[in-house]
Length: 240
Image (cartoon, rainbow, N blue to C red):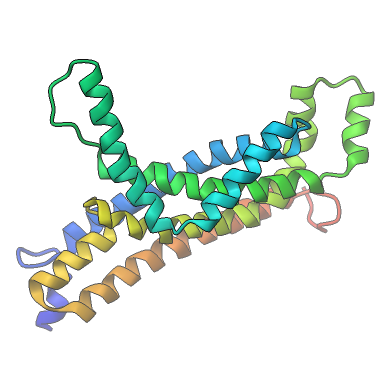
């Protein structure tokens, strides 16, 4: 009973700080996923476009980010980012010390990692759009933006949602690596709690529970979005 009480919200419980750490995990995951979505869209566009240089750069980007361990990317951004900020600050005449937050370093690093995977999902979704549909839109006189908004994006979204859901789940799990920067998210907080109380199994199990709650609820949200996107879509058997 005493062990379980450590997870409570009383004066001797760790419940409040664990809840705050869970919210931090969610915040850094959302920021990283959105960062990856923006960059992943640009990388997918570069790989789809006809420019050979952009295609080569985009291919090199995805190969590099997939080949380098995620934890190393985070270290490079955290420690390398501090050096860059210090160099720029010194060059501009500002007095130190200079630093970069663990949140910013972790968000950017995981965002870049996620962008490599998201670009593949988006590229595949675009290529799954029937070419005849695109040509029909062009024949109707649609401009590039109108064609993308009314024809390509709605159909590509249906194909991309399951893959984007998987990318989101990966981002949540990768967010645990941000603890190496000192950011107090779920993994960092359960490690501190376990070391302080010596109840390692209890707190690491609680940490696993927090991640499981986040991933389960977000998976349900993606499934709901997928069902809504399929309403009235040809071949799905769903009604409007």
